[in-house]
Image (tube, rainbow, N blue to C red; front, side):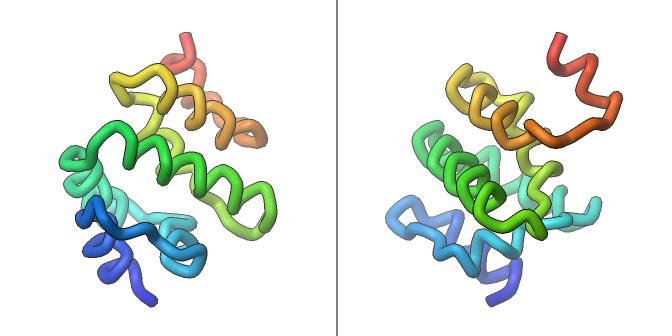
Length: 103
């Protein structure tokens, strides 16, 4: 599975991404994050919440996965539940760049 196929499936609200597809969102570079942002803006709130929750659960189960860039994207969401899950996903993140979004 590739990031391209994961993004295609993410665009379909009827599809649920598998753990393998979700793992494609680890360690996203700038261009891949921009591609995700383009799709992210088209998703409904329930779908965004489900994706972040599944990523947080997956990251807890596998410490080699790093979804920090996706969780940071979630920090800017208009929905408070989505922002809360994003914060949960960033529990081990120690970067100072979180100071501003969290305050």
